[in-house]
Amino acid sequence: MDIVQFFYVEIIPWGLWLIMFGLGMSLTLGDIKHVFVDMKAATIGLVGQLILLPALGFLLVETLSPAPAIAVGLIILTACPGGVTSNAYVFASRGDLALSVSLTGISSFITVFTIPIWTFLALDLYYTQGSIPEIPVLDMIYKLASLTIIPIGAGMIVRALKPEFAKRLIETLRKITLIFLITLVVSGTITSFPVLMDNFIDAALIALLLNVIAMAMGFTLGGFFKLDLAKRVSITYEVGVQNITLAFLVTLSLLQEPSLAAATLVYALFMKITALTFLTFARKWIKEDAVSVKRMSMT
Image (cartoon, rainbow, N blue to C red; front, top):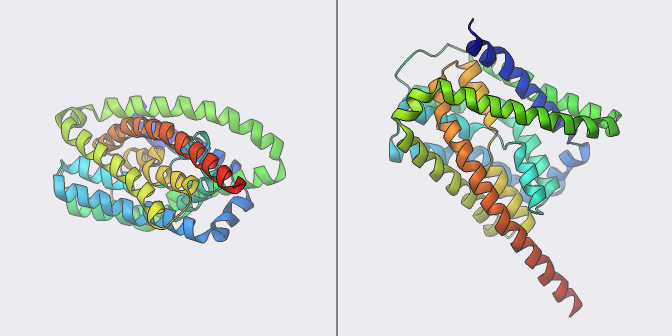
């Protein structure tokens, strides 16, 4: 086993475990209960994340017909839950943080079972090149559960028993996560470079369209169902900011096919740009909305 393969097979799973453990320490039972308290917003967010986003991925693939590796990688990405950075964006934009955190946690549990379905469907429909390790669906579910559900649960237990310790540890894990993500992106870029260069325009176009439409879809969904602005912002980030580490785990560690990571790499770039751009507008809109509500209450 060479050093690159060792990184993919051994290091990435542990890196994801630490990230999900950190997510668990940011969750409380109150956050989970929030889903049942605000069923309307939670349902809209989960439908957008778990059903409409993968459907959008398939629609774009069928419309634009990218290279097989780009097509499969994109579908895997859309099958992943919202990334933990979505919570940071929601906090910075003054969105509904409780809704964002609860959606990230719940979707991380559910996608353990849905990622294998979308992945194998995409492989069956689009991937005709190279060799992919045969992984039984139940085996993939077990591996995903051990790297998501278990660390999230462990993190929640630590938070419940040692809240102050958990808060301090979260800050340390954030620094480790940043270093890990940078290393992951660099290594992924190197190993998927041939596919990325041969299909960069196609990958860039489909990744940008997916990201922009996904965020617009999340914001529009909230507006259609008359949610308040803070909740619309949260749903926008949950639908548009994906867990790229989990996407890398599936493509690089489980399927062991670096070419499938190309779509995730390009998406990660656009995701940061659109998320930060939307943040500037969201902060302004929510601030103006709060002033408007305050004025109305005074009249």
